[in-house]
Length: 250
Image (cartoon, rainbow, N blue to C red; front, top):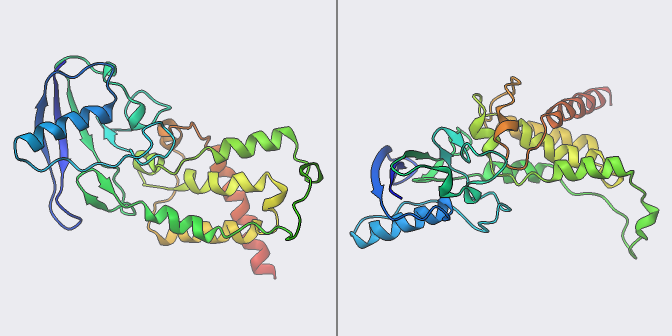
């Protein structure tokens, strides 16, 4: 099959960028979207050009590094999958596909389709550690966790930090990511000691990084490859509010 591409090219963070047209033939429908880009880069290199820079790692929908905006949708229109899980069978012969990086003030472009997501790392660092007793390992049964709580914690922990929620949000909000990371510990006994400081630290760092506010568009939930619920945002707000009142009252 033949695919026409419009790809964002930008040589560096401070350089101007633009959409560049490409055309590639002989694409197999069983190929992944990233394999199609690999084929394109082979063609570009053979012709003496500069290959398109894009990020990937596991290519199994686990790491979240591969995030791209495909035809205006973070990770593409298929839903509940990362970019590497998108197959070329989703497109028709002769289609024109526009590929752009995740765009947000807090996600500066490094080159072409590669962005800097270190803001997420700094937010996670503000979450701190989980305090546990040292010494011999406790028997697992000494820390009982209700099945519903364990499942809720796992649902929140499924977030892979790809940034699709930020790219999809009209405000470039990171509330779904932060909400999920805060929520996964609120359900577990191990997360109770730093519960207040975790919520305060992560939310304040999110604001400091320049992410926008959440206005309940729910585009984040729709774009999330792991289908993280926006209920996590409500939980984050409750945790932050309680922690703020506790801090002011102390």
